[in-house]
Length: 190
View 1: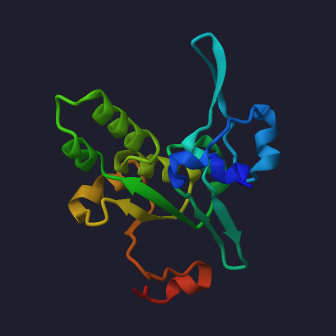
View 2: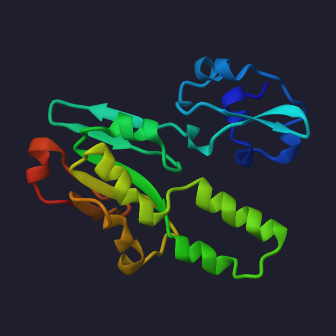
């Protein structure tokens, strides 16, 4: 049996795994998949109704502690619901993609397939130029860049993340530890 929530993320499944289409009322998706906090987009394709699930349905997590709040974005494009979830948190850990790197992968002129992949990469993730504005809108104190694409991005490539953000910007590293509240007074490790 294929879990419906897993089926909503087809890139994780071999194409042959999806052997039938199940019609679901889009309003029922929230109860089927609790991580879905963005509504599906309803549109018409060739005269037929079609439901496009936003990539931003990825699970987000907020941890409220006695010392403060930390929010993890998950893989996402800009989302007003994420901003609401993160409002006033001490730390927002957010994924980013370096736009210039993606554009360099697919120089013009692009084939239709290359253009489609480029648009997918840029719309399914948060461009580094936009993440600072998201953190500012949420009113967080610290923005930590995580799940950085490409993994070898330089500080210079990531510096646009601070644009529009008045708090502290941290470029995350594997195994980095960051305290919140009283623990934030201790030195960062990692």
